[in-house]
Every structure is written in C-alpha cells, then in structure tokens.
Length: 277
Length: 171
Image (cartoon, rainbow over the protein chains, first blue to last red):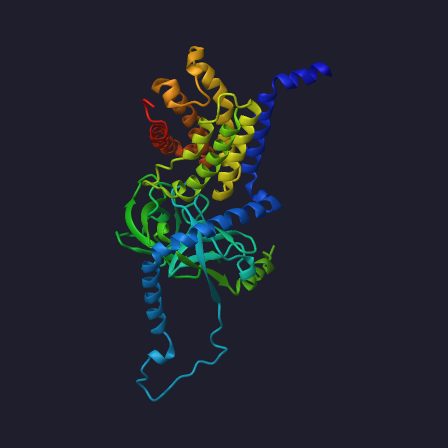
C-alpha cells in the first residue's frame, strides 16, 4: 500500500496530466450533454456579460451603417402598409380575418459575439428564453439567412452560424424550384458549397438559391446566395456548385429570430402519421 | 518564485485572455490564420513553477478561453498537452546550466536559438492538437495542416514581437 502511494507520488505529473486531459476530452466529445448542465449556464452568463460590455463599446463604430440599414428597412416597410397604396378602382376588396393568419413572428436581437474564422462558427445574441426564443429556431438578417438557435439561456441564445460543419441548409433554385443542399466546407467565409444538384439542371453563374421551406426552420423564399461557379464531375450522380453567400457573416449587427407559430401543429401532424402496414 | 513574479503572471493571465477573446479571435485572414497568442502565458511561466501547478494553470487558462468560444474542452486539452510537454522540451533543448539563467524563459536570457526551438515546438504542439480536435475529420487533413502551419507562424511572430518589445536587447 505504501509502495503504491509512493509510486503515485513519484509519477503524479503523469497521472495529473492524464486526468486533466481525459476530463477535457470527455467534455469536448460529450458537448451536447454538457450544454444541459448548470456549469454551462454559469459560464454562459459570464461570457455573455463580458461580450455584452465589449459590444456596447464596439457598437458605436457601426452606428452609421446600422442607421442606413434601418432606414432602408423602414422604407421597405412603409411601402407595404395599406396607406401607401393608391386605390385605382372603386371596387374595394377587404380581407377577412380568417383568410390570413400569422404564421411567422420575428424577434429582433443584437449580436454580441460572432466569429467567421473557425471551422465551426457560432454567434451569441442578447435575447433568450425569456423573450420566447427556443431551440431550432431560424435566425435571419433582412431577408438573408444566418443560422439556427442551438441553445438558449434566460437572457442569451447561442446560434450555430451557417459557417459550421454541422450546418446544412435545404435550399432551392429560384428559377425552377429544384432542391439542393447548401453547406460550408471551411476557408473563405463568403463562399459555400451547393451539393446534390441533379445532373439535368442547367446552371449559370448568378443563379439565385433561396430557402426551400422544407426544414421547418426558415420560411420559404429567403435569400441564401448566388451561384459563383460549378463543377460537373462525370463519375458522380450529382453536380456540385459554389455559392456566394448573400449574408456578410462578418458584419452582423442586429438579427431577427424566426418564430414559426404553427410549428407545433406541423410537428404534431408529422407525429400523428402512422404508415399503413 | 517571488510574489512579484506571481503578481505579474496573474496580470498577464487576465490580459492575454481578454486580448485573445476580444481581439485576436476576430482576426480572420481568408479562413487560414487564427493566432492563439494566449499560450504565450504558458511559454512565460517561471522555470521553477511546480509541475502540478503548470498543468492546473494551463487547464484553467484553456478552460477560460473555451468559455468564451463555447468550445468546452477544446482549448483546455490543447493547453494541458502543451504544459505536459514543456518540461520535456526544456530538458531536451538545454545543453548546460547556463541556458536556464533567469526566472522565466526569454529571448534575452536564453538566446535566440534556444528560445526559437522552445517556442516553435510548443506552439506547434498546441496548434496541432487544437486544430485537429476542432475539425476531427481526416478528410480535411491537408486544409487543416495548412491552417496549423500558417497559424503557428503567425502566433510565433506575435510572440517574437512581444519578446523584443518587452525585453529590448542590450538592457
């Protein structure tokens, strides 16, 4: 027993190393379970408040740009309100309330930390479950996509950016509704990959890719980007293309979280289906 | 270890974390270069730091960076491995007692050659572990290797600049 003790004391450096290294690797590879722990919410709160403080300063540097974006957005909205339309006909049509029902709601929030230089990039925003944000909600800026919410605390949310190896967006060609998948394989943060383009589709540079609305995360028709190059490998069943993202991930200020008010209904519908066997 | 050394190390600890998290993490040169300059702290720990403290402090350092980048365990494991390698690297490249002059490893005390070996080996160990654990995919090996080498070179550059700035020659 004493020898064992001495042995440990002599080689404590190796044992301590193994202990710490195993501990961090376990945490690294069981990351999802860690996200649920209380240690996580404490560290989230610490990093959130430091980022918030620093962002309060750096925000001043982009005021001019933020202003311009807001003005543009306002002009766009102004042109949509009923008062903006000149009635050319005496026959006025009224929309009954039951014809349209709100499907998507948007929560605006400020980005307080962001990266584009890693293989897996994330953003933190200053709103969380208190404001109605939940996991798997989509995040957009204007009509362009940013990513999806992967974890929430009461005041902050953690968002997986599209610039992430686990991110896969279902998109489609605007011109003919052909479905494709959009991914990011690292490197330049302006360019991503379009996978699984059927062979018979004729592509041109500049073709627009929009969200397909298939994934329950993003509404249909949001801008993903435009085709900037493509390859037609002979020995594969699909073509691959390169996409220039519409979103500039390096200059995200205020973003919007998409709340799908009918998501529960969609999920219940899917769950209620039993294959007739 | 004097209390002055301890004080300066604690100061450096917080300074480097903030520098890394608030500024260096936002540096992105075409997706290839991400300097991880905070490990300068581990390079500069005094020679007589107890070995257990070396590991624990490095672990805490990596963990703190992880908290901010939400990559729990990633920086911590790379730092612990680097700290573990440090005593071996030092004994491997030191030929005689004169190379361990002074409190802490520095360009001025140990000479350019010694310090370059020391910094390059340890930075490479850290960056290799870090980038390969981050990707964890063999298919992206060449891309990751380029990232490791370029980022290590950039980190080394930052380390050398601070060495020359903080400890000017001929002082």
